[in-house]
Image (tube, helix red, strand yellow):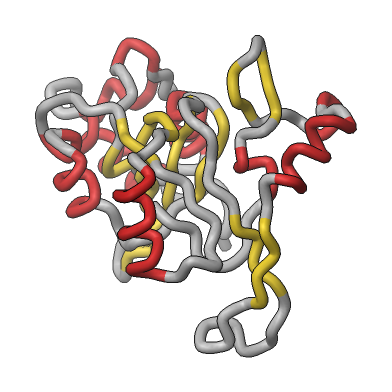
Length: 203
């Protein structure tokens, strides 16, 4: 996955937790770590084909292997918001492979190579299936495996989750969800969200 345009320098992975690449809350970032993030970044002029207002693009390649969660909120006509998420890790690609892929899009963009954790079935059968089921070629990446928290938040907001690779034993939804079916929890999620309606936006 390649980010289009600018991205937060935190995603360079130059901060460390227990000696491993990480992203930290701002109050834990040290001066040397902030400097390392800046030194890992090249500031290219923004491609005016995409960004006609000008400015700069923060170019870096994310360090591996950080645990991350990629998420996307799709707005579906007739349905409303639907959440997708994929837990996985940032990865390193061989330099020659990285270069070919990087130049195929735009070398001024920051690059995060991401591999989802596969389950061998459904939307997570393999990486191609993940991308085939993804709403579009964009997503938001958060540090850590936070999928279970996003799923709980989505249930509180009455937003169904149509794709995830979180272990069912780690997921918490309101107990009332049990009344909407246990055999297929994804379908039950849709039924519960439809029955209760959105938490916000009610007239």
